[in-house]
Length: 363
Image 1 (cartoon, rainbow, N blue to C red):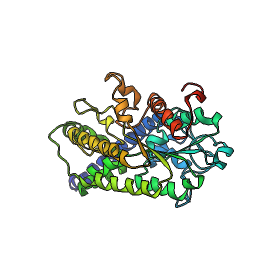
Image 2 (image 1 turned 120 degrees about the vertical axis):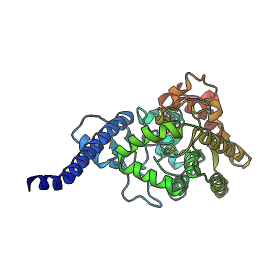
Image 3 (image 1 turned 135 degrees about the vertical axis):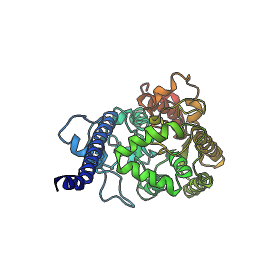
Image 4 (image 1 turned 180 degrees about the vertical axis):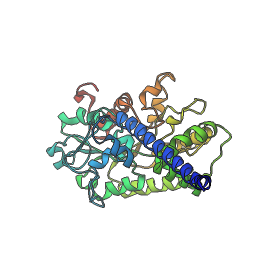
């Protein structure tokens, strides 16, 4: 009887052991990834909430996210702080309060986009390219608004601009967008939607997926995921329609800078966060080039000036360009934001009718 009972209990014990190991592995994976993200984003690594937040998948930016967000509402709470990464102003945007006189007289520049505009991972609010330009133009009574919202796609950015930001009568709109078009072109199959959801749900699955599948297959020419070639055309139509709705606003449209090159070897971390593990290197590079070509072509629109950041960044020596990024192929480091601000500042001044003699301190 004892042996029979032991045999009956064995599957239960084995199942319990498997569940324990998986649970332990999931917890360790969540803490490891969470602490890595905390460090990159400028949040304290060891605090009372680290373990609880790691297990729940808590995003520190949620501290300042506006729970009442919607048409006509700012993306963040006003005067909110989340670690060293985010300090919001009275407008519910990242950065210092703009000059009231500049707002009253419509001397406003809006920098619109997602996490690349927001400045994910930079040292401070002033270190973003929007923050650096704001400092340069503050003495001349020009307000520069950082309207970057992490993970926001083009449709959301346009809605934010047209229902909230437009009330400040911006004279200049700097638009830094396109990474979501890349994701939309390469992430439409049910298979990849499922993988993307599983990666978000289980950090252990994310690590195993990167090590066992992503690294040996996705980073090779053997991997050919489903594509949606028309996604780029739809993106272009969205942009053109948006530009035509705002003919009186001068728009500075940025191409996408990156250290990405078709012949450059990459680690999985170079892709994570920008493309959700969705393409081989040749496929990703082909779409990246296509999106930048599309953005350059929009220079034909009367109120649009294309600022070719991609071309400018490619003039940096190959062994130095990666220092302008946080590690993935799209998010800029402090040095990257500084370079982008240097590129944009003369364009913003020219669009505002300013002369170079009124330049403030060097960036």
